[in-house]
Length: 120
Length: 313
Image (cartoon, one colour):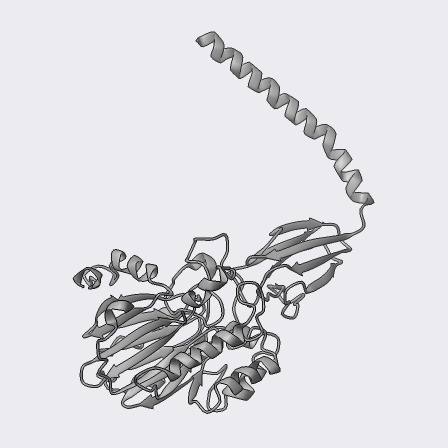
């Protein structure tokens, strides 16, 4: 029994090592792929929530919110940097983030709906 | 008969959980609530049939007509509002006026306001706005039409047969992550508004978002409502009528009875019963059973307001 447990923890350790190695290998590739993509990003609004509550983008990225809900919503930054009109179903709103920082926003009609865009 | 009667236990927090759940189970099917001396008794609507409602006057609350909504949960909100108005016409005791507790329109567009105004034409209607009525233009469209005798974002009060009615606005200037808000200016006005009333004056408060926290995660509450309710502590009978959550719910706390009305447009899920509070699609033949109107009867000297919800089925 003891031997079995010991062996099993050895296996977990090996697995953990394999996973971290994989992350090390994959992560530079991911960065390279991102650099090739156009600087746009989309956040869907559905059933009273933002699909990506925390979105990280590079400076200069245009973020577009699309309302897929049956209910109108808005996208309003907490400190007034940007504010959409009421978006009916399938309406869109875009804002280009030029400066790095964390931009918190909410739906001014349903304030429990919150999100943030982190600009690097 | 006795099995469906609910007496709320005031020794705890004013809510008998079993009774509360039973009321929830009736959502859309109708319930009769009679308040006497701060004790609320509820009966299933079927039981109430045939009982004569002895009232000095009555009024009807309608809510959340969402004119302009046309999604699968109800492709024809004009038709269901018409059914609601037909039901009101058919009530045995003609209501003296209507209260509309907001979300009159879906997007505050002029033609949406116009449609509702035309449909309710000829009736005496007291409105308060929902958040949908105040989008985009800081409520200008709403206030131009319905806010002539109101203050601030649209709050006001009036008296009928010795009952003091207070229409509050808790849908403007909302803060990120928060609930409905009354704001200091409105609270100050309200304090002055009720200051000189005698303790025996029955009070009816109506506002769009519930003035008690029904479900915080979905924003179904008003963050500074405790202050408003503190001004009403001295009164023997306070009835709070709200909309917003598109289903009937009730609760008693001391001498305050809270009640939410059904929508005339589409139902929303019970708190926490879905991922979010979005419109609930039910089979078309069931839609009218989850929409409704609320009839309120006032009996002078009996210290009682009888609140009756009726579905449109």
